[in-house]
Length: 362
Ligand SMILES: *Cc1c(COP(=O)(O)O)cnc(C)c1O
Image (cartoon, rainbow, N blue to C red; front, side):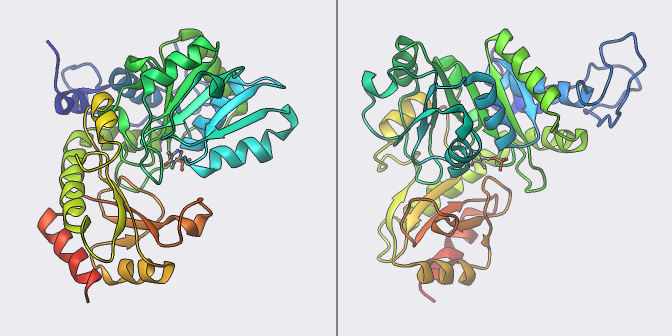
């Protein structure tokens, strides 16, 4: 029997049913364990990690390793896979810190770095000679999409490992491992945890040897996730299906309300049939999330719009319960000054749309 997303989220990584035992997962904050069993020391093993890794691994379709943040996951992957002199392919329009970290912190490896836009036509020469190809789809912040299966084929033909940053999609939106990727990683700070109170990340892979090397990287480098944060993420994951459904409903309503508004340009949401990425997105995505991106005439106009909206906070993350907006040029993303990444929360669609229309036309 194939279970639905809601059932899988609610039951993912639950402890075995035993009379008198807690129904839900519980945080275990131990730094040491009685020797002779499966666990020894809190930097290397923790049952609360195991529960969330079982849950996310089940949804991703691979073996999951949790990390202290999305960037801890990303950089652990880079440090585990890349060797001196390698070529790495990165998204030029994806999360900026991935590019900055490779340039500034891995400079000693003498890597050849190819930064390519997500939405381009991918050909063999672009991945030629690469050890690792990373794509981010839909990309943050512009929500461009690439064909995961096609890029995975090109990467594999070139002998490269293919990894997908799945943060904007979540494991419910897209299963890159089943589309041919070797690795999927994400910032679970965003929709997966969903309550804006946790910083966390993970990597899943179908390769047990790579999973073991990533675990060893985590234990040895030592920046491990706190069990309490991991437990909060697990608690949040239980409602991911419900939250995504409301966020996507809000995104569809906001997209329709703003699409032809005279003050809005270039609105993107891959879930809409009007979006240029919709065709390819709907082939590989199972459902869409709550992030919408659009442009206003200037930085001042975008900032004034966000402060006029009473249900929207200016904040630099996305995927949470509360609607937020972030003007990405503030952080140096290569985008126009007036571009807003708008994260629809779980408010009622009619309230959110009414608030936005009033804020646009005060
Ligand atoms: C936020 C984000 C990251 C970084 O994650 P942190 O949890 O903030 O370290 C990486 N990739 C994408 C696409 C993100 O949105």
